[in-house]
View 1 (spheres, one colour):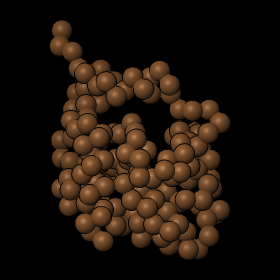
View 2: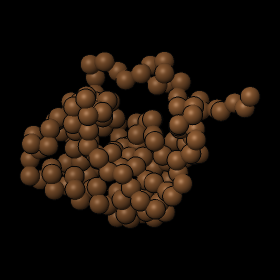
View 3: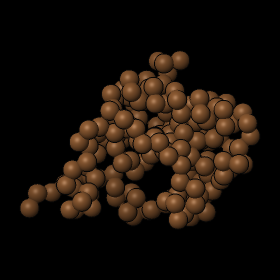
View 4: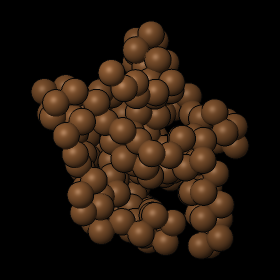
Length: 162
């Protein structure tokens, strides 16, 4: 039998999502700490890596204000979120050359939201053939790049694109 090593997953398995706290708000308290995975901030929104990505470069575009619904956002926040979403896709294209993207918002637990109380937009780079037998047969997704390497690449790229 072959073994698949994914040591970063143990953190999720053992600790899981924190109860009562907002990991997005916590990350924003110190956006320059690499452990928080924040790759870019603006006045009203920021970009953070998904700690448990579906693919390399899986990011979330997040309003700084802790709100749950699109209707809770003010006009300026909605505008900045969309501008930052567009900018993020441009950066991801430059760094990873994906063939496409999944972009989505999960509103409510039944819609797949792991964190229901702080709105965030998922951006997942996709490549032709990036799915294989592993998720189907073994319920395992192989991420070929360590998240710390992805963080360093994206943080630098966001700064260079200004």
